[in-house]
Length: 121
Picture 1 (cartoon, rainbow, N blue to C red):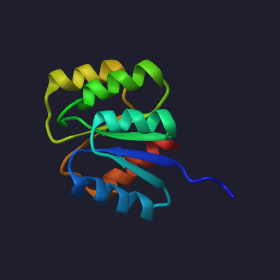
Picture 2: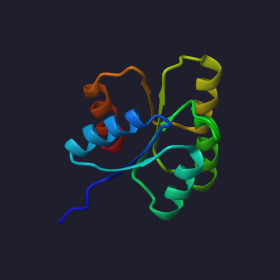
Picture 3: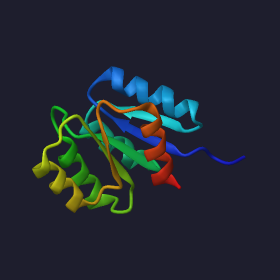
Picture 4: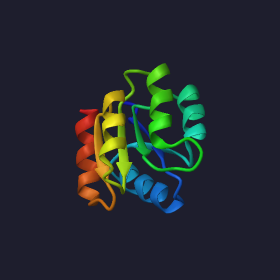
């Protein structure tokens, strides 16, 4: 039996984590969630996922700060940033750290699946 790909969803909003989990599970992925950057780093250290969907703005470790930590330890780990803001300065910062894509909130569920499928292909 082929192991389904594991996606870690990192978002401080519970409703967003549940939405991602429901949609991605429906499309055949295994999904884990984290409510902040520290929790995400702990999870990645224990169970290296195939992809991280990372919210840009979170209390504590922000998305860019979490991405910086992930890149230091897991440079090849695919990360897609999820953001409601179109701040060019922050986007340029995360692009330099190497992200595989961006998903703008609010997003169409088909866009979510398309981005995830494209990165994991």
